[in-house]
Image (cartoon, rainbow, N blue to C red; front, side):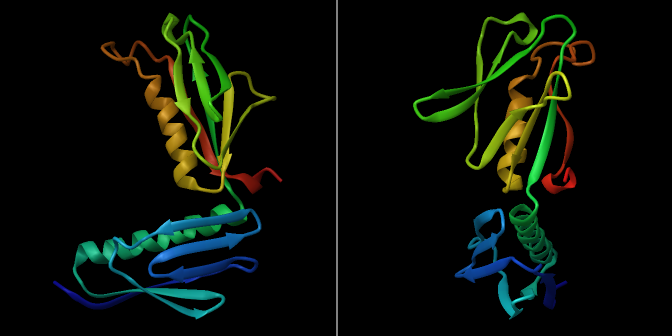
Amino acid sequence: MKYIQTDQSLDIPEGVTVNIKARIVTVTGPRGTLEKNLKHIDVTFNKVSNKQITITVHNGDRKHVAALRTVKSLISNMITGVTKGFKYKMRYVYAHFPINVNIVEKDGAKFIEIRNYLGDKKVRLVPVREGVSIEFSTNQKDEIVLSGNSIENVSQNAADIQQICRARNKDIRKFLDGIYVSEKGVLSDDA
């Protein structure tokens, strides 16, 4: 079944500007600017006013309508990022060998250095993505906090850290050691 026309409207909060040119969406807010290329998705953008945009799919089937909702949530996440920001908290879990995590800089790029995972001598390095800041929690032992404007960069950095600390060729019910996401949310909830 084809849908002749499907619309989704998105409200823009005060203090945020959304510019769309040739399906490249740029969102500017108090925390900075985010840009996303959506040329691969066949949708039409229409700016109703400075407070609202509509996203339209013409003659689309179920997958195109699903892509429409995806585009809406992508732009909504960008708006949340430039107004509030995103935060992921990760905890180190270990039974015997304490995991040692540091932030190092090599050739101008930042890396998260993970040592002594399951007693390994191997040093694991995870590159820090652009726009992601990393802090060690002061009020909680063995916790690292990743924060930034782009939910994609923050969550992918958290996933990279969690993936590099996987116990391979072992029973994961017994070997629970690793660094896991314990909490995720927006930054301005703290204030």
